[in-house]
Image 1 (spheres, rainbow, N blue to C red):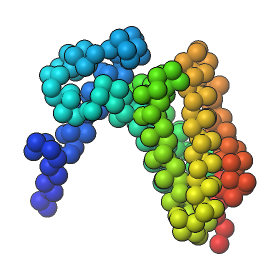
Image 2 (cartoon, helix red, strand yellow; image 1 turned 120 degrees about the horizontal axis):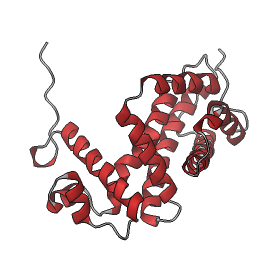
Image 3 (cartoon, rainbow, N blue to C red; image 1 turned 90 degrees about the horizontal axis):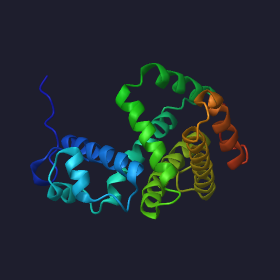
Length: 219
């Protein structure tokens, strides 16, 4: 069977290649931001770290701060994927526990490093407004995903007001948990102390939605 030709983006670059390039830049920019701060990091330094021209950096990012956005998004991609694959017959904690265990067994070194960088950028967002913007953009995407997921589990349209309120509250709860756990790990807490994270997530989502979301769907 013939393969599908990759979609071309700007300048004839495929979307897949552009995504990889943006992620490579974001990794190096995030390392620099964490090591020396955003103000002390220049576009030239980011370009040198990734082996590109500064002009190329500005073709793909509107500012040096925006270079953090792809890594910050990586910080919620697994979470969004896990929520999308949540089977109706499972509770949220059971599903998250299974997917967390799977990630622990199967995640590549690159995925683990990206997760660590995302945690650092989320922590940096506490003091860097531009990084905070990237983090809140990612959280907004989680909220949109949550609305679709909650709508499906409740048998309501995603535009329903109750669904939207539940999605906003649940995504805010996930944001707070991500920030809390990430900060604790960076301050030296043993990650094994958060082995109960799936249960914490489920409790937070149930509390945020008044118990409407979190349990198996019964027909």
